[in-house]
Length: 433
Image (cartoon, rainbow, N blue to C red; front, side):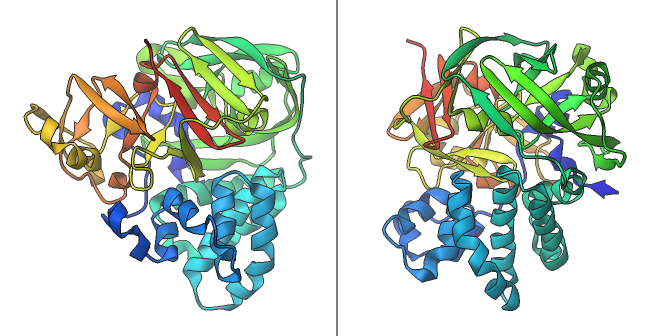
């Protein structure tokens, strides 16, 4: 079988900036903060404007908003609350004529089931989405739905993942040949270094590592299209025991890739595994520091920074004005790029910059971009200054331009630290003094 290439986030490792710059996204309407009040709630959901949706629903608990509150809970990682609202609503939605609502409800439910280790239920929802709503899926939604619909049936009988931890801890990180952060992970006692990628949807492991450990792979395989167009054959497995720092997991579902599909020829580097969101989010607050340490904290929830949302294959942080300035935050990607939306909002300071064409538009079309010495990124009431980050000066396509940009490792490396608090859904950065 063949599924979407977007699931393989690691494919960006061997590609230049132009191919890794953005994920696929929803269409932007261009509405400003002043007229958000006039935008229908259904449109806020369609545009993935989660901050505006959260503001609107803050004090509205009427039955008419139950669907949208359930979807918002899913994006905030409140999966049981989301299930409580959405499961009773689904039969009536399915029997109705609004396929957009059905798609939105099923997408949220599928994510809820996957996050709570109900793999068969998640697979059923993703399969139903392909049946009812395939024609209306955006590219980013296809990247979420198609791989999961085919991979999850292979995990249908897998036991739920569990976690044992003695509390907060700190462990060292290292930089690999790609300039990305790694953490030492032990699988059934075998140690190896895995990429730190809190945005990745699935734990990943190379075939050679799986063989070395002696993991049992699924008899069935799934074929994935990589970003280069080359087909990749993957298995699934359930890792009996996995440990890093003081976190001890059992029954970890993972996707197994052939070694050559996780190999970066330009740097002669073999990816051994990926420490993904399903292993990081249950730990609480996850802080990566410029002294190359990863700190896990289960103390009081963080209240600073800006809200972030788990948006399909992205972690999306709200920008300065909040609702209309979303940034994808992706430590597993080496390169950053700011979109034409950022350029339009900062036109006065950027129009004098020299531009060069980057092949980042739809179908690889060239788009002019400038690379100023510094840019300011608003995060709530604060702003951070980043250096040498390209900015597109023209639209690159409606789906790409939904975000203000992607903050990859080259941007995050300029900070003293950054933290994802998966309990309060806050993204907090500290700048170097």
